Every structure is written in C-alpha cells, then in structure tokens.
Image (cartoon, rainbow, N blue to C red; front, side, top):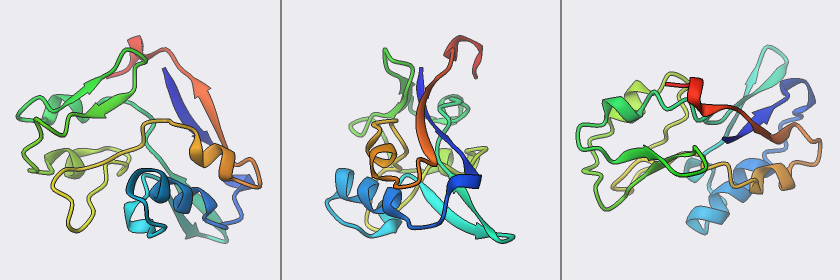
Length: 133
C-alpha cells in the first residue's frame, strides 16, 4: 500500500503541497480543498495527511469507504450520503470536509504533493496494509 510519508523537520511551511492538492482534485488553490494540511506548531510545521490506516471504513453506515486494489482508502461518491461520520471519527483528522461538498474527501496518495514540495518533506512510501485496520 502506498501512502504519503512526511518529514516534519524538512517542512518550511511553503504550502506548495496544499495548493497542488487542491488544484489537482478541485481545480482551485484554496487550501480548504486540500487533503494535506500544514500547521505551524512550536516553531516548526506539522504535516497532516492520511496514512491510509482504514479506521474510517468500519464507521461508514452505508459502506461508501473501502480499499482499492492498491490498498488506498477511497470514498465511493455514488454511495456516500454525506453524513460525515468518517470525518469526526478519523483518528488522524485526515478525512476532510469542505463547504459546498456533498461528500468527504481524503488523500489518495497520488504523489502530486510529493512532486510539489521543494524541500522533499514528503515522499511516497510503501506499507503492508494487511496489518492495518
């Protein structure tokens, strides 16, 4: 399973990752539509992005969340009823809700943010999803 791994120590908060994520999926550079978040904290920048743990899958009342063949947790928009239970439940706060959106969104490990980061604070990593929730 691929996921976006982050190195907080390399992040300088330029937010190129947020902009490219929002532009890739929502055709805007508004960070409210980014699946990745950069937050200043204690003199450094914390990076928040989905680690594909899958904890959200079991709380969806209609089965709109599942893993694809690559192990990435995906939102099935045609099934989602927009209850946003997954957003409230997400242990990493990586399931997102944006104003005007009917369904939640999250990182799908596409790698656009990795390519956009000038400091290489983000990389695509591999993990064995058979041991994950």
